[in-house]
Amino acid sequence: MPQLICKDLSLGYGSQEIQHGLSFEVNSGDYLCIVGENGSGKTTLMKTVLGLQKPLSGTIEFSEGLSSRDIGYLPQQTDVQRDFPASVQEIVISGCLGRKGFSPFYNKDDKALAQRSMERMNILDLKKRCYRELSGGQQQRVLLARALCATQKILLLDEPVAGLDPKVTADMYELIDSLNKDDGVTIIMISHDVDKALRYASHILHIGNECFFGTKEEYRDFKDGAVKGEDDND
Ligand SMILES: Nc1ncnc2c1ncn2[C@@H]1O[C@H](COP(=O)(O)OP(=O)(O)OP(=O)(O)O)[C@@H](O)[C@H]1O
Ligand SMILES: [Mg+2]
Image (tube, rainbow, N blue to C red; front, side):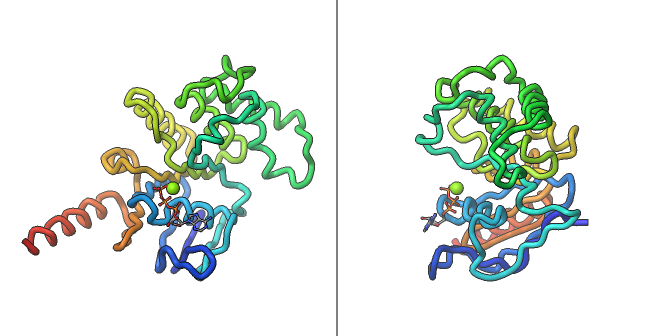
């Protein structure tokens, strides 16, 4: 049974439409990669799925008792966010806030969950360090641990490897893959690396002038067709 069904979504801001006709579904245990050019609306789509903004039209349905509050989110990083003056521990545990309604206090369960998430991401030794003094790769692990505090079910990751060197990028992909395969976490990830998407993902959503949703095998055929179409035009 799908965890998330998006039907005929139209996305945008005010009267400006950025994308329309987006339909896709995500089943438990899927690994969906969202690819597409800069400005095509990938981050807007994630924010819409999270309920941070409304679609211009279309529907978003969750099942299995899930709601947008059960999604762990790793936002696309800006320089301002990288400079955030808080400890690793504080940032990780703030992932619990979405579930807590108006209560600003953390309980024992929240603290235990933050500890487990830091262990899983191998950053326990960093827990007292200031976030802004960490390397880019360490910061992304902190944000993944934070997202894991929000949920163990679905993670939305917006370009989690942007700006990381090849070794740290490879480690990050392995870590995300292990969360998906070993822990059964559903992954929805925005990435510009189509090769890696084809290696790790089960499904691809391509957003652009032409949109595509299907398995990665179907996506290969779709891309081959597009290249052949270009050749035919020569
Ligand atoms: N808050 C906003 N208000 C108005 N327009 C916005 C807002 N945020 C983004 N946009 C516009 O919406 C379009 C899609 O932006 P979005 O950030 O979703 O693209 P993206 O696919 O994530 O791009 P990138 O690969 O660069 O991260 C862009 O033209 C952008 O300028
Ligand atoms: Mg983006």
